[in-house]
Length: 129
Image 1 (cartoon, one colour):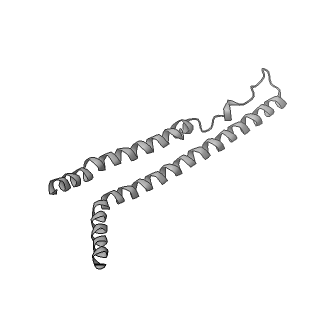
Image 2 (cartoon, rainbow, N blue to C red):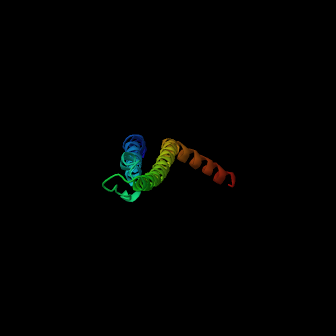
Image 3 (tube, one colour):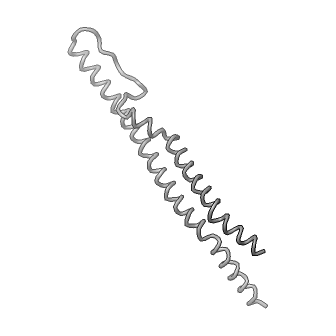
């Protein structure tokens, strides 16, 4: 029985802790790719959905400013949408990191908490007899 307990403690604080770390790291990597943070940051100032107008040949001031305004608006919309998605992704990743830290804390005290709860439960049961 003691050997089983020691084996569990060794597993709990070595292999399982390492696997918990790898799971958290994989989840954070998944969220990074799910929100496409790298790709969106590279195309942050690109026009939204690649929408825009083309400049006509020759110099026409009215056409030039019309195309310039439309292209600028599409870039602004692209920036706002991509920026919002990047910001949301970063917030979700930070929340996941905080939850991972809490999970590590719970994992570290879980064996001690189990023993303490078992002892307190036995005390309650024994007070009735």
